[in-house]
Every structure is written in structure tokens, then in C-alpha cells.
Image 1: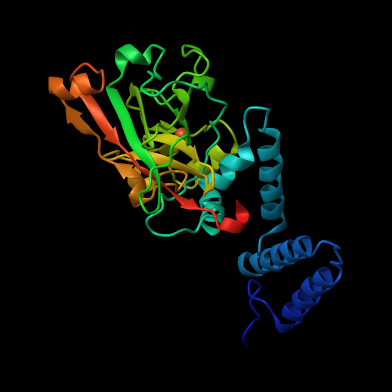
Image 2: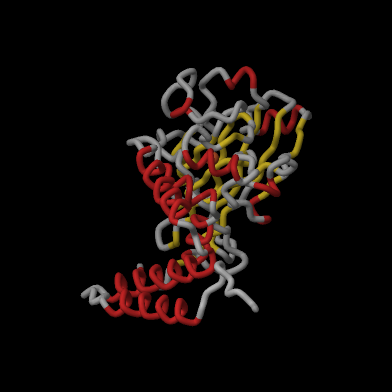
Length: 303
Ligand SMILES: [Fe+2]
């Protein structure tokens, strides 16, 4: 005699699950068609999840409790749900479906949680005004903002933010003055921008909340490879928010936020000759970090 399995679905159970899902979907009468579409898809996928995973009631409540604790971990300056979205690759997936562009355009990448208004600074400014200026490896970052055909874009704004050589942003570290390692730059007539700073370090995302617990339970590390954030805007062009990653970082292949793209990885050149140092008003040795940004023109109708 073959006993029915307790863990697999019977045809009666399948029929009841179908009826349940259909009834939930049929009750969606939202006036907003996009809301109806989004909730229908969420209900369909979540019911399929229950069918596949067959959670026990304790497991289901543990999942709900995780979401409650994620909400409780949020403050005015910390969004644990964004962190959860980043750590599951969902922020990068949403970025991908919203920023398709020609292959010659600079790819976008997630904004992350550390952007804040940057002080306007002149081209060539030193962004490192805290103790990292003495400790860190000095670098000059430079490039041109152009359209996809290479035409320079003057008066474009380049919003820059980065961590220091210890992996901390000014908002996390009281030793750094407010606005440290941030700048709002405006490109010159030839579309060029440049600034001086210190090489950022890789850093861990916050691990003292429920998302950190999840990473540990999943056997994942919390590290992000060293990077500089850029948000570039020019009239008549689609803005881009992106990262520039430092080649050779040990976490490039396992970014906790899944934000690395090959076109965004730059290998800084070690410079120790005095002519190059004089050109950039640096003291040798320093790192030369070149990154051009190519923006997608908006259609004429959108201007
Ligand atoms: Fe960052």
C-alpha cells in the first residue's frame, strides 16, 4: 500500500489553491490600472512561492517577523528596506529595467544609501579635508562628460561622493567635516571635470540589523568593493547615477549590492614623474584615475 505523501500537493489541494488565488485576483478592482497590474503580479508570484516552498506556519510567521524587524530598524538616516533590496539584487534589477541605453553610454548603477547634498566646489578642488588627507593615497580623478557621439557637454553637473581610506562616509564618521569627500562640480567648455582626493577603501554595509543577520545566516559577506559615486546631469540629456570601481579590489566579483559592471571598473595609474604631478598640482607619487561619462541625448520632444 502506498501512503500519500504529506509534503506534496494532492489534486484537491491544488484545486483549492487555484480557487483561492483566483478569488483574491478577482477581487482586485483598483481604479488605477497600474496598481491593479502590480498587485495582481505580486499576488500571483507570492501564491506560487507558497506552493513551491510549502512553509510551515512557524516559518511564515518568522518571515513576517523579519519584515517587521526590518521596518523597526529604519530611522530618518537609515533605510533597512533599501539595504534589503540592495542585498537581494533587486535595486540593481530595477535599475536595469529603467536605464536601458546604447552600448556607448555610461551604464548606470545603484545610488546606495549615502548620498547627501554636496558643497559646490571649483574644478580641481581637494575633496579630502579630514584626517584621511594625511593617511590616504592621493589621487586625481578626471574625465570628460560628452554625449554618445563624443561631443563635449559644457556646464554639466557632476555630483561626487565617496568613502575615505577606511571605508567611512562623512555621515558615519565624526572625524570628517560635513561635506567631506563630496563635491558638486560643473564641467568646463570642453566638458572636462577633475578633482583631487584620496583612494577610497572597500567597506561593509551596516550589519547590526536584520539584514546583517540574514547575510550571516546565508553565509554571505557584507563587503562592497572600493568605489566613487557619480551623478551627472546635462541639459537635454538623460542624467546618470553610477559608480566608478577601483580595479584590483578583492570584492569586485562579490559586491554585496551586485552593482559592479565591467565598463565601470577603472585601473588607476601610479604616477611618480614630476611633469604629471605639476600638470595636476599634485605631489608625486599619486594615482591618476581617468573616467569619461557619456550621456544619452533625450528625444527632441522631451526637451
Ligand atoms: Fe558607496
